[in-house]
Image: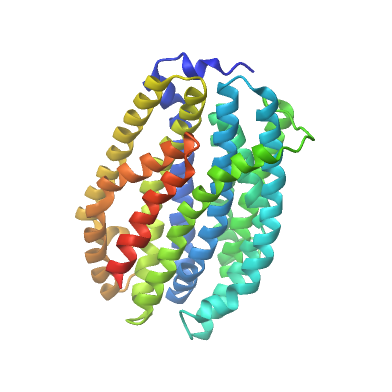
Length: 403
């Protein structure tokens, strides 16, 4: 239960020991995203378009869970570094309770708005029907998602990265296994189409939460549930959590806006954008894994007054993230058609999509600066400056230029 190794071990080995399990789990997660879309695309191109239109709201649910979870993570890590156990315990308890409440609100709100939301981008009845069916099932698991992310960030805040890796991977692997079985009907399972993809996603998330609860039971965390309510601590969590949520939710706004622009020119372009966002997870999720390994270390060392270690942690994370982005740039430059061919056989779609991938990939390496800086600021409890970086990126530059 002693966490002082976070300020004592050599920095690079420490960062790698925290980050590599998360990178591995994020790579499995990104593989799930691609495989899930691959199987949905096998239904037909309308199914993939429906998935692309639902994605921004699906991303919003994740943004609320992860954003608030970052607030939980940063607060717990800071108080553990400052040797304030009671405040760390209360922060974890408040975080779990609020995550449950967020999940309930998201379930009701997102399911209610989806028919009107989807109608803004398409009038094709098959796409509308598929999108509503998929969203009602997946959004019904919003409470499970919110609680799963809360436990993920609590485990990360105390350095239990291998446990987090196992729990996240177990859900993703179950999803990958269930996708073809439930979509196409294998063995005793009936063919369910896009409903099968939704159920596979939800059951995978349920397994992830169950795994966290199991590990918390067999090997208790150095954080205890406390019935104490502390408004100041709650404000501290939200001070990081709200900007972090808005930070991630900006991408949902961006995707919805781009869908609206592209829908004018044809559903093919909406699909290409959806495929790009699935492919980019294979880069941004592993980079995010390194940042997740960095975040509790920065928070702990900041709380312990170790300023030099904070600076070195940031630098090493930036170099590693840039390396991942360089790999992605090379892949998109040299084999864009192969990547798009995973989701469509339409030559026109592949040609247009290849042009788009080559242009978009020019920004990958420089984006490592913004995502690393945002993650570091969140770990330091500085949510507003982190949000400002994303506002500049999404709202001030990309959206006006896109229009």
